[in-house]
Image 1 (tube, one colour):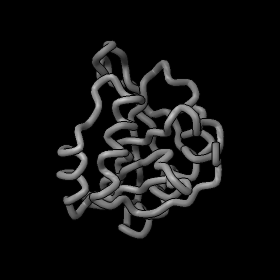
Image 2 (cartoon, helix red, strand yellow; image 1 turned 90 degrees about the horizontal axis):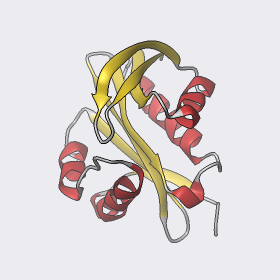
Image 3 (cartoon, one colour; image 1 turned 30 degrees about the vertical axis):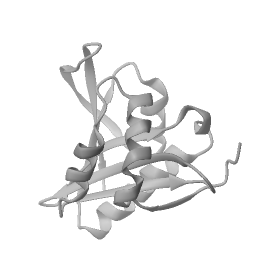
Image 4 (spheres, helix red, strand yellow; image 1 turned 180 degrees about the vertical axis):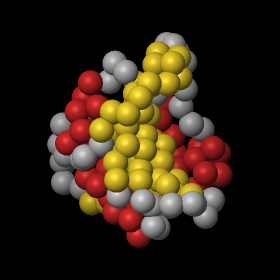
Length: 148
């Protein structure tokens, strides 16, 4: 498997592959239509990690009124632990700065230790809990913030 990748802004033609990644990674995945509708918003930025012949992962951030929210990050199973997730987070933070975000936040499942460790490596700090935020299964979300 090719672990060489590059990041680029997500295009409409990437939506099918990203929807498949959503299916693999999340219990309540976004549909292709939901991805396309979100991408069309002026406040959103989506990035994909591409290999020579595959999309390995993606992420998205919304920036509104000086605040950024990382809404999704997902990496296909076979590409995990290759630095792709961290590269996506850093790209989203960079775009947040370009769009004048003063702070960036995200929510992550309380049980997702690998993601929490990744976000902490990227400078996020735990700031609170949203009780029963997630479904399938019901679980708390850890709220994490970072100054931009």
